[in-house]
Length: 161
View 1 (cartoon, rainbow, N blue to C red):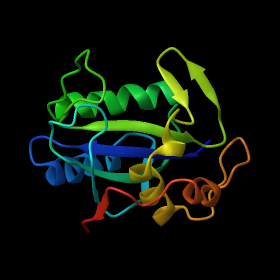
View 2: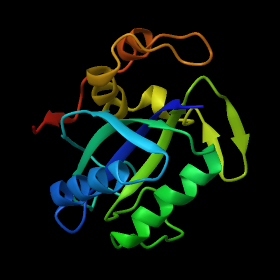
View 3: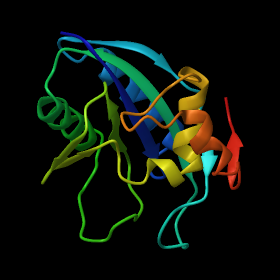
View 4: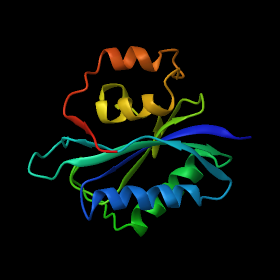
């Protein structure tokens, strides 16, 4: 069965625009998966350490038959192939970050994966790109994307494309 899955993309190292373009190509090539849509790219201020470059972010919609953990493994492979090194520092600079934001109407709380993404409700760099491709979206808990947007101002974002 196909599930609609939303993926957050982010990069602030090694030519971020190219990193996101390459990631979209890799997402489109995943088995049992179709790239359904993707948002414009946005520049955003970094979370965590302030002494790092601004991020470029986007959101992609996939229709996938992969299980949540199989998709997570595939996303982490794409990250590694694009030069991602995992460090202990959270929210530090990275070549590519791919996060499963929503996986159909599922709610998951596993050691490797929490869905819906645990901070997406407070991140303008996730919500505004998501609204471009799914403006009528309802979260598994019943909240609408419009409700989340009303509590998360468009601050620190710059639409690039």
